[in-house]
Image 1 (cartoon, rainbow, N blue to C red):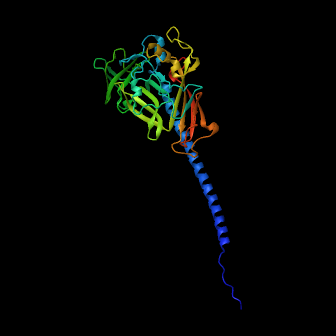
Image 2: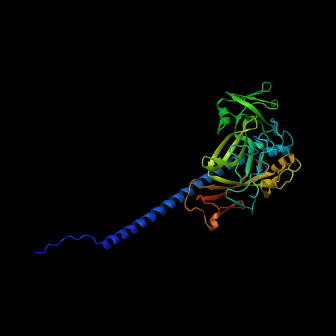
Image 3: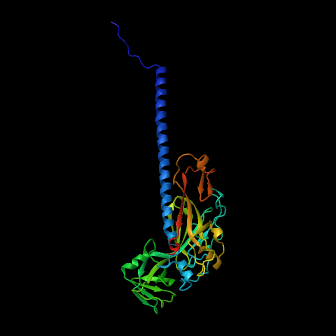
Length: 380
């Protein structure tokens, strides 16, 4: 009887098995890496899109309110040439003071970022003509991005039930005062009072159900049932500044001392902000030459005006439309170190945003929107 002995694997068989196993592992690894990269890219795209939408939502909401002065807007008050909005703060007209409520919208252009220009990621210069109140913000504005200043009365007002012109006090329903402390302003110090004919912007102190004004003449206002309403006055600047995870869209709000004391990062991952302004066809808006309601030219901020006087304020009064362009980026790397070919160059309001030298592996995308100033629509 012949007994068979168990034979082991030969070296060749072992090597073949190892090669097959390595090939299978390599395939699995490639699938995993591709899936992981696709997941990172998908997440980066989603985050950039989400940030872009949030940023545009903030900008649209506040830009539309520029010039709101109660039931009659700032442009209409100016055209009437009677009962003009009265600013009870000391501020030179058109000079860029946070307290200059004679200018509802004002912009500052970063050099080399106009249509047909090319801006490299991380390049550029600070906007020219920035007032010290903005250039000294903390964090500071980043180079290569425009800056936007808005001033208006908040959309929610409180009907005034009693006025003491001698003691400079206003009274209203206690619960309704809460409207003045919404949207991140727990202790407002700037207010506006309007009655569809007159408007005053002034400093004040809110306590319980009483608002004590600083320097303002209240004798031309009467309480309800007259349409007298008090609002929180807003003076804010939008800009790009460093935040918790690199650059982001920031909004700084001023107080009655003319200081931007509330500075918040609204949306992270917003890397660049570009602005253009649509101007009414009327060159000099007055009672004799009111706006016609036709936006016939679009210019960057330096093309609207660089004057810091009443003439410059008059040019900014022509603005009825704002075009916003921004670049949103992913918070983390999404794959390749740099984009290739056409993907490396984004268009932002006619400016080329060049990523050729970028090696951070982040996904970037551009968004644009045109926003009409609700309070400067013709006939409003």
